[in-house]
Length: 362
Image 1 (tube, rainbow, N blue to C red):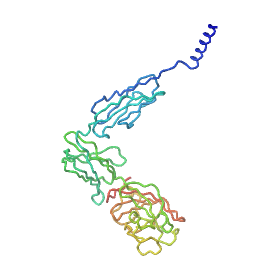
Image 2 (tube, one colour):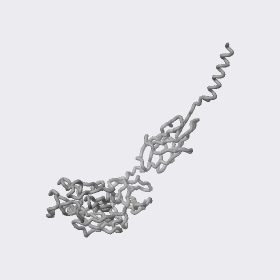
Image 3 (cartoon, rainbow, N blue to C red):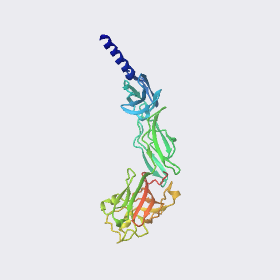
Image 4 (cartoon, one colour):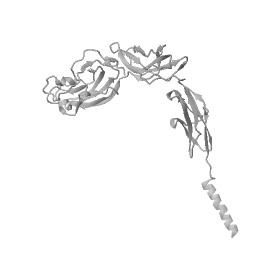
């Protein structure tokens, strides 16, 4: 009997080994191989992880200050870290190895980022227009620890930053640039001896686009007015039946008649509604006295006219119209479609946030 039981146990054990296989103790060990704990780093740094164990590694995640900055899915497990996007000072790095069965974490290391060498980046970078809206003046705050400044420009559609000025005095905090009818981006570095700060915030002359919106003819009701936010540059529609909206409307859609479906249709200055036209039912208010002008397609792609704006322009499909606002900004309208039977206008717009600047390359 004892022999039979022993034989049965051997058979069961063999079956379990055949069908279940031997048990596997999966392991993963991950360490930061580079940089080392306590290192001082600057510029672009390669973070490398050493991963060992019996589990099949799917990918390794790298974090800086508990913020994921990238993944590596094959050895060598490493990524690039742009420390110029970080503040100077201590930062922590950790790697997370994600295996098929396990996830393991490295010890956290700390490195000291030192890009600025004690020089603060310029702040309060602003843009204004010069030379009748064709040039750009860049202005920034003085940095006490600097000897001077480096001004860079990147043209729209380009990936290369160009040096456009080196200011040799810490109190020279403005520069006028001729972009030759192009729009783009600006940034400033402060420098002392051979060291420089991180770049300032990037500021732009690229006009802000608002995707297609619709306006209803003013007598149809709904939103017939359109205006741009002076801070964000974004466009929005507004009802002309509320006097309070006079603070926001830059133009509106009308056929200058009592109905809403008779051509021709017009884009009109908000103030034009107050010029004795009894057929337009718009309440009295301090509506903006803006100018409207049809512009050629080629001109509209890079520059708006300075003069020639009128109170209203007849609307045509696939046409461009410039807007010169009472407070000195420029906007551009592209009419995509005019639904004459329903009294609806479909348009896309751009707004130049730099006051007085007429450049509209986009």
